[in-house]
Length: 212
Image (cartoon, rainbow, N blue to C red; front, side, top):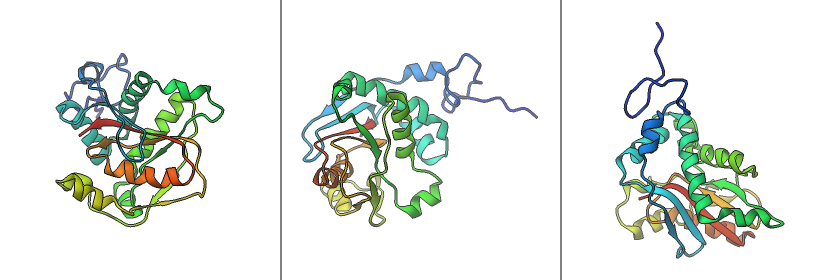
């Protein structure tokens, strides 16, 4: 029996004209752009997100990608991130002697083994290919923490993230693009950025699909 490929959101059969494996072009074009550039995190110079987590279509796609193993969604979702980066002026860094390095928020090893992959790493690798930039793992989880999505207040999110990362190398590149799927309070990005800045990063942007 042959089961045709179908769109994860509308369930329509995909054709050779559709550009992605698990998402039809019609649904992709319906994702609303709501660019968000926030420049007031303590250690992150700029947070660039394509859309809002309140957009039900974008939220569903992130859930399929993150929790249901639809890894092929890394391509369309990272394409949204690349658009947001270009609109935010990322090209300025490619004229520097030290162009950007892409890295990602790590999962705890147990959570990554259970899920089978780190969705943020998939996004970073796709962005690295798009911009012809290196992708390096720079951090690891020091211990397992509750998911930020399960925590209500921003102050509790900061407490939950505090001390949760360790550096993998002693010196990091000067320009770093730190990739994650969603940013709500910015606590996770800021905690990771704190270590990267102390280890030598001079410019650090957070790059997410959506802002919560």
